[in-house]
Image (cartoon, rainbow, N blue to C red; front, side, top):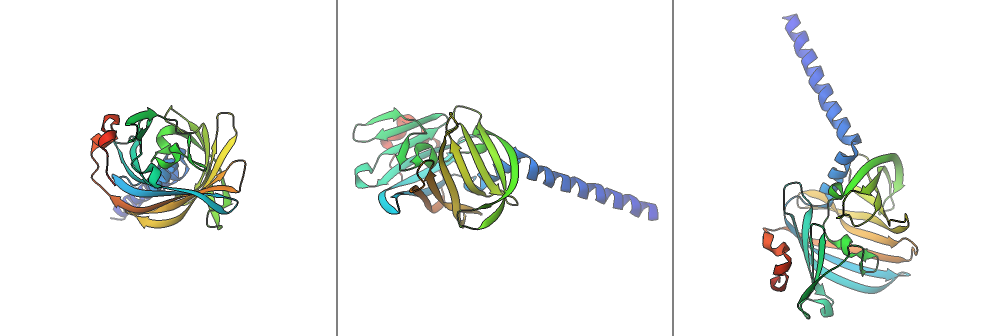
Length: 262
């Protein structure tokens, strides 16, 4: 009987060691850390959210724009597709952005034409087209964990973090490389620096104002600071999250003239 208990104890120890090793691997494997961070930024199910961008120069508001975004993955484990309809200002109401794979389209109901645009093109202030569509960094970038360090987050609190270096892995990537800081325990995104092909810093983003949305604590505000002028800031706010049954045909270029969902 004692021998039986000994064997059972050893088996339990092996299982516990295996579970610990799996947890440790998930905490140190850069791709697993990045995937966990993506899952915090983006709900897994199809969803709708209101995106409001406000541009500030030297502390003064100079511009604002509001879009309604619908996003979902079109294949298991794949990249998100997004379709965003402008609602404000009035001059832009009805215009649409569509991201599907490596293609990003802008549709103007006034001209009834859809033109391909660049993800790096500025939409408002420091927010580019690629910043408002829903993306999985884990699919578009190759990650490496460079360090564990303490940083000041977007709420001006000290946070223990992992610093990841992300290098573009395909043509869908909006930036050549990204430095991403995530919470050391939860992998929640805290801060990111975005770089051009030349290595020039384009912008710094702070992810903050975490709220419970669609089953997880998610950042509902991103503060984007220009890489050259720290007084040029754009705040991107996400509100009115809701799960939606989003038809696949909404993400086809030919459907854009008929797209009216808000």
